[in-house]
Length: 90
Image (cartoon, rainbow, N blue to C red; front, side):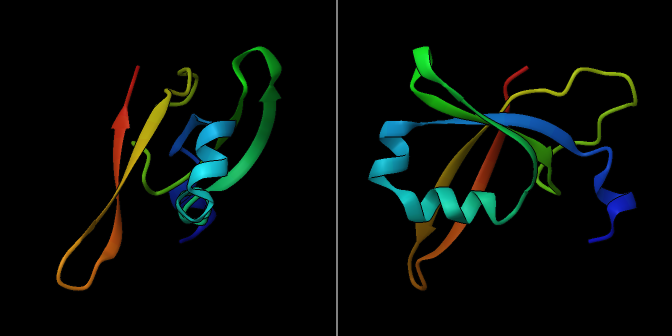
């Protein structure tokens, strides 16, 4: 995907340290679909917040605040291929 197609598909998301420790492969799967532009460990929330661009995100009009997204990883039979469900939070 070219930068011009990504530059307006921005958002942010967070993973708790507990999730990172429990399912690191799922975290790597999601991060592999994103260009991370900022990552920050938030001590009092015990999570890592990420900002970036992704084809998984909706196009955002210029000047708008990037929304938060959550992800759900699902694998279904017969091939058990992982798929990402994306939910815009705000």
